[in-house]
Structures are given as C-alpha cells and as structure tokens.
Image 1 (tube, rainbow, N blue to C red):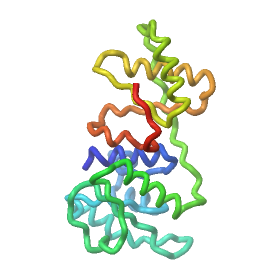
Image 2: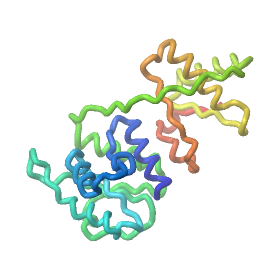
Image 3: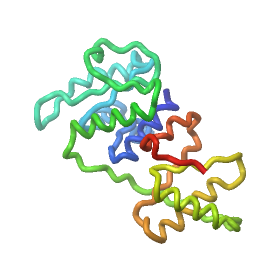
Image 4: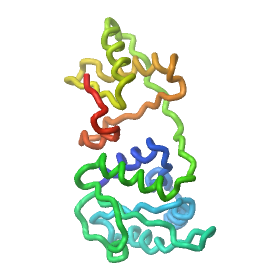
Length: 215
C-alpha cells in the first residue's frame, strides 16, 4: 500500500489540493493522538485508506474520529473511502461511495479530484513550495535538436515522455530544458518532482488521455 499512497498524495498536491499525510506531519516526540486530532480538525474532508491494516489500533482510532463535526456547520465532515488494495471494507464505510484505485490509477485520481472540487468549489487552490531545479550538467553538448524537439512537443501536448535506455541523458535533457524554460516564458511555472521511487508507470499518467507524446 505504501507504494501507492505517496503517488496518490503527490497527485492531489499537483492538482492544487493540500494533503495532510501522517508521515510528513507527525515528527519524533509528537503525540500521535494530538497530531491525528489536529490533522482531522484542520481538514475539510477525510480520505480513509482501506487496507489490510484497517483493524490496527491507530486505524481504528481514525475511524472512530470520522464522526468529527465541523464547528462551523455542526455537520460531520465528508469521509471518502479510498481502495488501494484488496481488503475488507469496515461496516462504517460500506454505505459511503468511495474511489477504487486498484485498477486504473489515473482514472481514479481524476474521479477523486473532480469529486473534491465539486464538493468544495470555493476552496482556494493549494500552491506547494517549489523545489529547486537540479544543477545544470557541464557535459551537455550537441543536444540542440532534442531541446527544440522537446520545446515543440510541449507546446502542443499536455505531457511528453522522454524514453530510452539508462545512461543516455534523459534526465539531463529534461533538466536542461527546464532551466531554459525558467529563464524565458515559464519563469513561474516550472516544478521539479522526482518519480525515481515509482515502479508502476500508471502512477505517472495523470495528464489528459490522447494528449501526450513520447520522444
């Protein structure tokens, strides 16, 4: 499940939705009870991950906290079950429509994002802090043709996938283009994220269908 949870969180953040994730928000020495309660109180909705660990002590504590009411409306906060793997759904969640990520990750992510945006249409988009681009390589020479090809493809497609065997300079090419773009028309629109830890290519495909290109 851990291999799917992180891409889910990254996908939401990339689409302007702020995510409270325990491994990012709970630090050494923190009270687990206080941290979880704080995370729930500061959130507009709760995504409940359905997994084989749903019966654990802390998972049960989170389930018990699902009846938390919004102080402004005195109504329970929305709860959305998220199926990342085959597991028994707790009785408390059976009557709630969730989102199934077990087959098509990209389609499920779009369904979840659309559902959250329709429920909270006035929520301001979350702008995560930008990560600095990797340093330019001093070994980048004689790649002008590839840079121009990448530029043309990105002008006409939502996503471009640079493919090839390891060691031929795919990342170097992308970094070189990103530095160039940052100095020109996209000064405020360049975001660097690493997909090195992903093992399933489906987790990367969050762009529009039929609007991508590979080189």
